[in-house]
Length: 365
Image 1 (cartoon, one colour):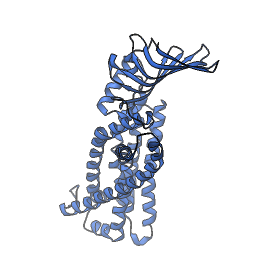
Image 2 (cartoon, one colour):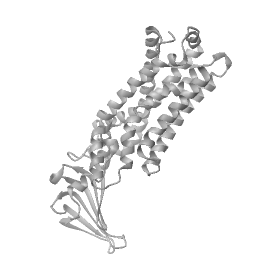
Image 3 (cartoon, rainbow, N blue to C red):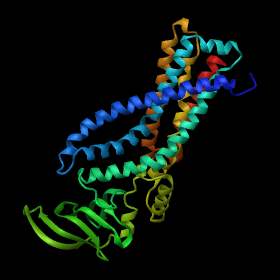
Image 4 (cartoon, rainbow, N blue to C red):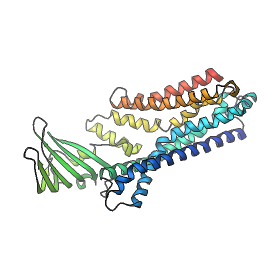
């Protein structure tokens, strides 16, 4: 048995079943509690919009629920590891496994296999569900929880430079020359970059060149006068192609779509290090579920009667949460150009993989 990576089939299924059921239980508990708290904080703003009611609240839940699942799945795997190993150690089941000739890695192997399945499921869920929910949620928020313009669920809050002036759109819909901007504001600035006036309009269409603002209202900053001006064409230097690559949201795009966006930005000479870091993190992020059993396995070993079980559990939890802190910090530093994108996304994972393996080998092997 010592030559096999996994223990017996019965023991493998037993450990994997314990682990998976605890992952699901912890995840459901966390997501339900957090969903209720989040809904309480946002329901007032949603219901304040005329025409919104219970259907809009359920729509919000359908968008927020996948985001919470994706964010807290790795935490659930960490807590499930502790909840699996703690009783096994307390009831001397780990001692019995070691007495039967199993190594620490063999005891840990069923959980690692189950975590790999969880990581793959998490990646597929993020790509197919979470990205779409995130894009729709941001577009809905940009619309002030009101009706989302048709086709505008992909892009929101776009800022573009028109010489010294600024063109801002709340949402975008359509593609190419059929592109439309919704909730548009055009800021007129002087040579000193001071805003001298602004023009607001509910809709802007491509006028080849420029963007035609319909039902526009102008506000003169110097004279503090606001007046309707009807239709006006602004920003002749901005094209639909520039708009298409102006504000790429990595969280709202799948891996394939983000790859195309990065290529388009590179072709336009734009900086893409932040997006490349998030591209790599779409791969390393779900794999954090594979790391949690290794970090939490500290609670599995050592004699329960020695009085160190609680300390080992705290150490395992501390290692897991330290990974998330360092992972977020590395990604943030990479966004500012401090780390190359590949290192920013993968260095924390590899660091804690070696750290967890070192702790396991030094203490149990």
